[in-house]
Image (cartoon, rainbow, N blue to C red; front, side, top):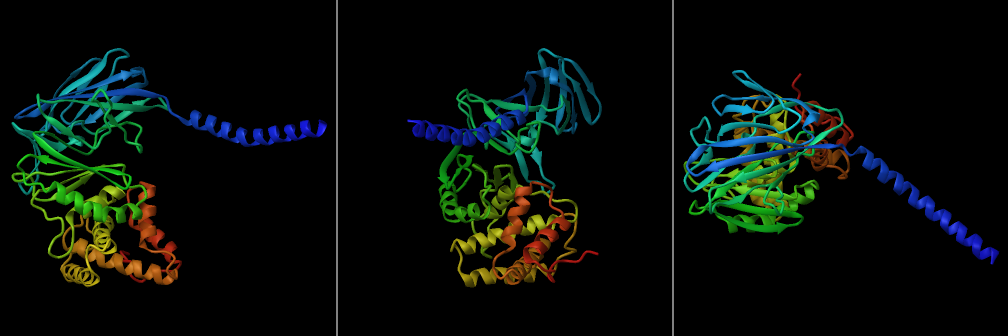
Length: 415
């Protein structure tokens, strides 16, 4: 009997040793959770009217926000008014919200034209396509220490209009806005609404939607089939691949190009999935989405080069293109790159990006050779992605050199 009680005591003691650390860890995690204040964005869109009305309401604990300062483009934003103290200058709006019924109203012009003349923001009689970033001006905020926002978005659309966004949707129809790397949540990514067609598919752990206005020649099913073949390679390369991916597009007069944004991208419906030179605009932009990478001046060649390099790698590793076509594509890019300007130019495009692909391929080969095949440029790209910081040349060189374990002759010298 005594031996049985002793054994029971030992079992309970061991159980306490196991449970206690978990309980402590749970308490620590709970203590690290920041208290939240609510932000509720409401947008009213009318068919054929590019100017939408927006309301920013502090729906919970508004007393934790001392002021919000919006950087305003007067050609896009106008008619600011609200509760509390609203101070308007030519290029900014400073809002000191009251402790009760705190809201700020304004109007935003969602019509957007690029320097080339193509549109990347439209509201017409049948549909609307624009960036959520344009709804709310960039903002600085002074808030209670240790707090963060919890935001929702409500889009009020014309009767009969459908909607596709990269945001999770509550049963109420409101959308959850969550920027994990920011304390203040602001809508970002592409939005499309109206008389649209949307095709959806789950690829790996990612819910993919391809959406475009009816009659705009968007090849939705072709794109989903292409992504089912290629995207698993990208998901393996970038484990932090987003849970959601929205691809939107339309025909002329929309801009004849492609633009990535958080968890989403725009591509003109006329752009091929795979070009004659064996490159893919769609995959280039999806690499941007997967990495979420930004650059500092002079390092854009790294961001754009990685996007083009890994779009080509994805096509090759997935078996979408043959070894011979893969080598031909690299040779074509190398020839194009011979006409480039300085690699560390402020912006990288065209020939500069083509040249960057060749540099990155050489760096990858040197890392593999120096590490005995244990490391590659993949490890560098994953590390840059996981850090979530603007990419600098110094950091890229540091990570690549560490992966190789030796200096890299192919690494550019901008000294």
